[in-house]
Image 1 (tube, helix red, strand yellow):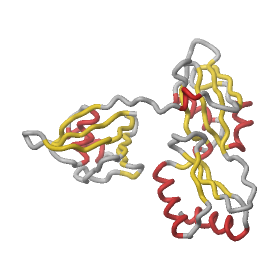
Image 2: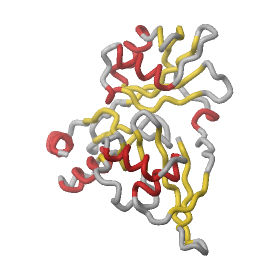
Image 3: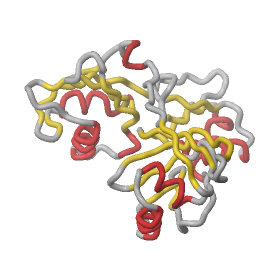
Image 4: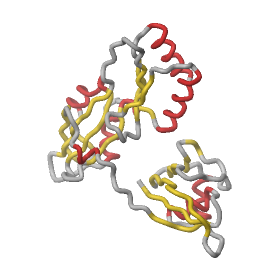
Length: 242
C-alpha cells in the first residue's frame, strides 16, 4: 500500500504515468484502498482482457502519455507432449522472470496445444525469444496482436451443491473438497489454506458468499452462493472448482 501511495504521488504531482506489476485480487483490493487514501483518481486496473484475474494498476494522470503495460504471447507446443498451466508458469519463472511480470495464462479450447499468456510489455520480447521449453514439452512463443474471442470467453464453471452444518471454514472446505471436516481442519492447521489470499488461521473462522479458497497442492474453490436451510437445519451452498 505504501508503494502504491508513492506511485500515486509521483503520477499526480509530476504528471507522469506509472504502473505496477500484475496483482492478485487481494493485492488489487489493497491497491484500491491505497489509492483512496492518497485521494488519487487517475488509476485503473487492466490485465490484458476484460475478465482478467491478475491485473496491473495503471496510474494515468490527465495529459500524460501512457504506454500499454500489458502484452499478449501466443505459446504453442511443437510436439506431441503438451504443457499445462503450471508448466508454462514454471518455465517463465525459471528464466528469471518474477511472478509480478506474468498475468493470466489462458488455454485455447479449440486447440489444446496453444495457450495465450499476458505479460508485462517490457518482458514480452525476452519471453518470446527465450521460452522454448515448458515441462517436458517443446514450445514456441511469439507476440500476438489480438487473442481470439473464443479464448477470452468466460469459462463455464461446473457448479456443485452441498449442505453444511454451519459456515465454519472447516465445514465448508470439507464439503467443497469432498473430504471429511477433520481432514479439512488438518489442512487449515498445517497452514495450507488461504481464503481470499490470506492465511486461514483457525478452522472455526466463518466464511462468506464469494470467498475464494486456495489449498496448497490441491487447488482453488469459490463459494459461489449461500442458500437457505434444509429440513435438517443444514445450509445449502453452491460452489465450483477452478
